[in-house]
Length: 317
Image (cartoon, rainbow, N blue to C red; front, side, top):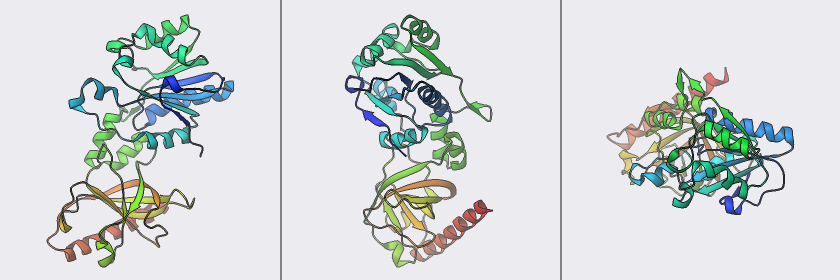
C-alpha cells in the first residue's frame, strides 16, 4: 500500500501539475460516509489522469471555536493517512485551522483555494458540509461560486445505517459503550490501534499469559475491557494473528494512571520489545473488572482466552 504524500498546509502544497480532484472535510475516522466522498474524488482523478487529493484540518474546528468542549478524535493524522492510502488518495493537505483561516468568507473560500491550488479541477464534499466564516457557506453557495471559477462540485448524500446517518459522533458513542461490531460496521473496516511494544512489568508471563504492551494513547478511549483482536507487524508482512487484548487501568494489580493496551497472542508470538504493531479490534468480550487476588485474575484470563478462541473458530466457519 502506498501512503499519500503529506503537505503541511495549503501554503506548502507544491503539487504536481495535474488536474486536482479535492475532497474536503475533517474526515475523522474515515467512515463509510467519508469514504463515499473520498472515493468519488479518487474515481474522477483516475479517469482524468489527475491527482486525488484531500484537504483536512488540524486541530478539529470545534476545538478552535470551543476549547472547553474538546472533540476527542477517533484517529491521529498518521492513522488517517494509512486509511486514506488504502482508498487510493495521492496527496493529503493538513491545514492548520487558525483564526486567519476561520475568517475566510464563504464567497472567498474557493478563490482562496485556487490561488494556492491552481490545478484545482473538482471539489468533493458531503451534502451537509458547511464552510467559510460563521459557517455561512453550504453546497448551494459552493455550486454558485464553482460555476464562476470553472470548478466542478460533487456533493454526496449522507449514508444511513439502520435509518440514521453515519457520523463520527455515532462511532465515538459506539466505542465508548463497547458496541465494537456496530462501530466497525459504521467505519467500514476494523477499528485499530498502532504503536510500539514497550517493556512491561512481566506479570502476565509469571501467570502463564505473556502480553505485549503497546504504547498507544488515543484521544477517544474505547470502553475499558477485554477484546478479541488480530495483531500484525509493520515490518514482517505476515498475516494478522489472533489474540486477546485488555484495555484499561488494571485495577487488580495496581491501578495505572493512564489506560494500557496489553495483547496476548493465542499462538506463538513473533513480536517483541520495539516491534511496531497494528491491532485490529474485532469483538468486545467483557468489561474491565477488579478481582480479589491474582489467582482469580489468572482464571478469568484463561476464560477470556477461551472465549477469544471460540470467536475466531466461529469466524472461520
